Image (cartoon, rainbow, N blue to C red; front, side):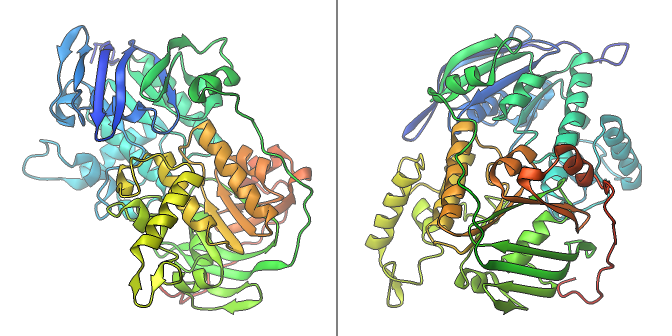
Length: 524
């Protein structure tokens, strides 16, 4: 640190970086440089090699060829500890936290201090002060498993900054944030760069990149297609073409909304979160065939619990009907049998089995039925034919159908999950953050798939913190705040300012009656 408390300048230079994995060259002679006090955005499609390159910078991978310099000195990191010692820290898209430990314990984990006495209360106060100084809302005493995805991301930020990182590599940092939270994050990043820190900003949200970045580097298929171009004067269309090599449409075509029969009916539904606190407080909703109902809200206001209640993953009180069939105590298997498909927020922990192959993941909803099921055993040939067909149809980029799911990029893993869920021909599709962390080409593909299910007559619940996505795809939008539905609007008549006010708890002139949670919710 300098005498005024700012961070010492630090520059990174990569030259000719090559990294190979079985069947693929992830980085093919990549050059990249980061200047002191700047935000340098790194763009590219899923699988373009961005995360691999930054994993090399963060000490997780070693390059097969090429050189990295920090402040002009050649370095070769053997581990993330070496990178942190040099002032480089990375916040990954998939977090590395211990669920059973508190926020403070996760931040302290792996440090040489404290050596003998933990003094947890003192460190809780330090974490609270650090979080408050950065505008990050997180409870230092909360267990990580009790936190929303957005709150877990904030813990990762605290981990790196507590360790004194001068260079912060952020992989999809805004993917789980509401618009207001994104503005706060950008103010934090600008304050960090003003103090001398440098930021590598990996993202697929082109508008955000243009808003925060000083320079931009674009990668495609392991190579750099544009190096360090100035963000000023660059358009979203220019970046999209550099990323995917073609024109990308900004919206999907919509047909007139012709609602059918009610597929999902929820009446006075209550549920608790994992902390045993009220998560849903008297939710009543209808979703019709051929309709997309968007659920808008800031992360942690009951969206995840709403999806889990509908898909049989969380107990509830109240009344839920699916196609007229009353559901009181359901399991996920019951929901599947009734035609419910689920694209969960957590792709690795809930949506897939990371250590199983693409084939095994694709047949998870079909292995009990013909042609995959052959009596009491699985017809391996039929399963492989199905997997090959879906891999091609949904453009899942992988060396083979035997590739483990954990080796897929975020976009390809999402394609796998969508392929499995959509091919079950659901009458009700619950999609939670379906485009989180995806590039513009993949987002376009996901949107088309969701609209195709709408055209096929499926009822869809779309839960997203991206208000533009909700307004672009939904027929109606419901705003959720602290487990309450504050209003439901036809998208054609929705006012963005009013929606934003409701998302942050303002009633916009609407009456707000807070229904108390009913006692005795199962699973508390």
